[in-house]
Length: 98
Image (cartoon, rainbow, N blue to C red; front, side, top):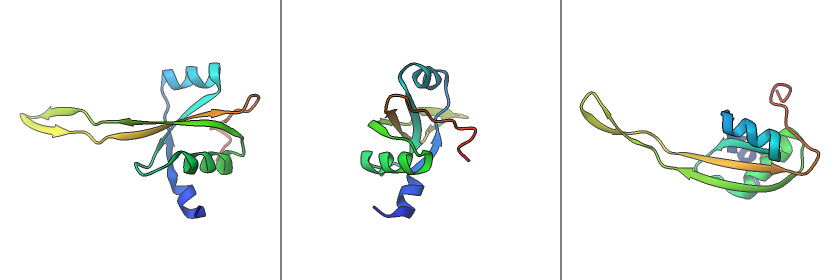
């Protein structure tokens, strides 16, 4: 895999109450990723950027909602998320990752 591609796969961590509970309880972290990203690319990106061992990766495609803006139909963009489970005893600290 190309090193430039690996660095572009992860867009941002998905920060929510549910993702924080998953990180504390199960060692799972949620990231927003490119729509064309694969599980192997996400695994390589997380392992290289955060220097941790990834156990598994699950992918989720969320469709954009249909909304009405000032009487006109519109559609929000969809998002692809990756749920990354780390090996036991490992964690990611987003504050010191930069």
